[in-house]
Image 1 (cartoon, helix red, strand yellow):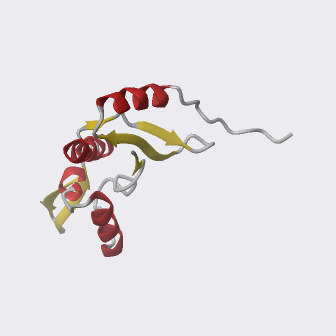
Image 2 (cartoon, rainbow, N blue to C red):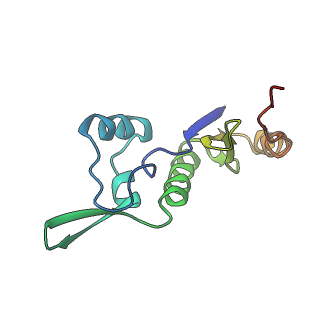
Length: 124
């Protein structure tokens, strides 16, 4: 059972003074199944202007590992995440396999390790 995880979800916003729109927060809560991603990706603090929300340095990796942990609890076995990029090299999503069978995991790891890197084609 393959799972897709957005490659640049909540960490694709400004690193400091972050204000995430309510609709976007709700979408991410729904996707991740919990609002817990907020405390994993951001830390709150105070400055001269009041409460401030800043992105933690390794937010992307922290959310990915948190998400894989949730998949592991639900399915038992989870593959290494494979970052899928567009032709310009920008991250699109992480491809992750999750399932109840250890043999399936072994097959998924093999298949995911064989992926090719997509490169942009030049039009002459």
